[in-house]
Length: 307
Image 1 (cartoon, rainbow, N blue to C red):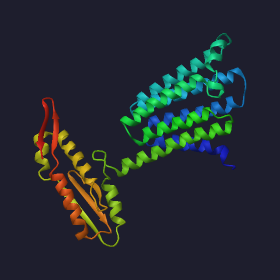
Image 2: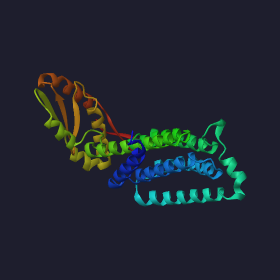
Image 3: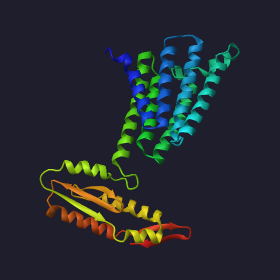
Image 4: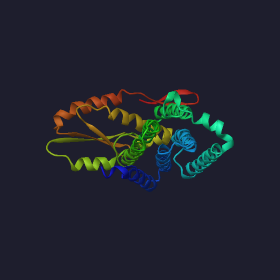
């Protein structure tokens, strides 16, 4: 239990360091935003002053806005940092203006809780819009980081509805932990996955070969005349062909596991499977690829260029 007070700090520090190390600027800014929100909630929940309520309402509206913006921003350093600094500056200015005595009526309306709960109405509106946009982004781009952003928003929503500072801190630290795990998953996918085909890469193949024991079968798959195809129809069409082949290889039966070896070469490993048992599955795979038509989109229509 003595580690509980340090739990949020450890999560945010680990997340920020890993995001900085892997140059994932969106994750870095998102983690720092969660850390700032955690500190703001810890202070405001321990106080009952009007200024504290205004600060909590501002944080409830600002955090989902920031995380949503980060979800849609490209993973490049300068745009992320520039937009983040601009958003934080605008939010700090808004909080400062609302804290002035002249803005007390507006601040009271702004900080008014929804349906007698603890979450301000403006915060509920911000979180609802943020979750809808984050869900849309996840649907359009189902990646680990987008998934992490969505669930981090859900955890942050629970934090702003908490009554105790410790509960809010744990929920926001949970949001930071979700981002940390998604960052690790993304790094693993980059290291062991092939971006073009979605199959495991040659590094994953090498490690799988070291773990093989007993009877097993390894099949090498190659595209005939791929260089001629590339020279004739262009590298974009070649990439489309490789993606199509990767999708077909992923459907191999018999427990086979496909890998991208390099270029137009692939490998399929059948663990604990002798050659005679693996051959029918390989023949079915070959026939499936042979019978698949390949089409390339052109401005004049969809023209068949290879079967």
